Length: 531
Image 1 (cartoon, one colour):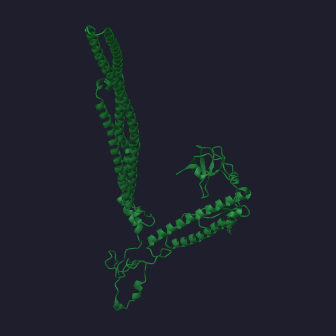
Image 2 (image 1 turned 45 degrees about the vertical axis):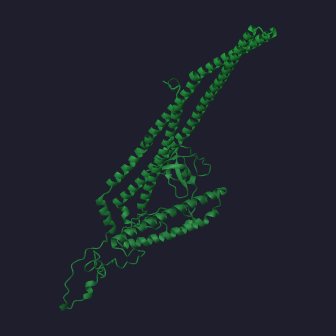
């Protein structure tokens, strides 16, 4: 069933129905837009909420950061932030896939509908024009036929009149004949106009208008189908992100299950244990025997008298580390209890060793770069590195002094000396290696100035050394020609073995399966180190 056959006489109904359908599309677009605004506002509020409670704290300064309950709360805030991102994605996809797409399609339908209605109006105007011509021809035929009848009656009356002359009779007959001829022409014209109108009317009602109505029907059905797709997208848009939203919710659940009250208790103990022994029994002081009171207060290892554990007697100086008078912070952490002092010294010493290792690596990199510049002057001026090498050497000496100082304090505090040590290989003037021993001393009697160290060329190192075991793999993300000396070429997607990590100079040492080694830009590869 189609509109052209069943609704051939319902032009106004079809026009109104199609217009109502387009207005429904506009309403749905507005509905989805308001939904996107709700999603965007919801996501914004979630992000604001996460930001409000997600206070950026340093794990070094805030002891709570090591507690599982605290970390789980941070994880929940991060998951909520990710959840907000998915709500924003829903809003973006609704706007792109429904609002923008339907609005564009709606404009096309409006233009198409306007074209069909104009064609219908044009056909109607053409039929009305033909009908006017038919009506005019019909009225003319009627008028001329009546004039012909009157002329015939007058000629007959004149012919029967005995007083009329022969000339009058002939004239009346000629007039009647002329009027009859004109009436016949009008009759033929009317017949032709009638035939033309009937043909156009048939074309109008059986061909033109049904075709236009059927096109409008097809337009409306396509509109309904597109609208139905928009209805489905309204749901599918959210379904597509539900797996990720589910992962966010799973992350929140996991954050809850990761809370370990026993471990939190152990962390509190580890962070706050003073290392003092509990106060011992007080000795009886017999004044009758003339005892020496000074000897009873000679030990400072353990607090004497009742300790102010609950903070009720802070006005009395019973507690060795009184909370009322904040102790002066010293560089050797002597203001802390023994256990906490050892931990802080150990932590500080590890930081110094890491910084020292970084400076040593920087010194090695500068030495290699200087050697390359000396052998390839076109790549750079070796003298331009002198200030950096000198500064690095000064930093190394300064850090060595701090390291020895903190190692001494740690030993005094009863800590272990097996902290993280840096490794540095330099070359003396005779070509021999000076290797720093684990205790910070040098194997040779004299310490060469790092600024005077001479490092071997990249390729020379590879030829003289034994093959180093790979520490991971890397995949090339871009092509690299490897035109400079000491570098190695690679193709995008090529997998290479990582032999030496980036020491801060932007280069990573790699090896091919055939044994070729060289340096490549670190930013050109994706590195996966062995765990």
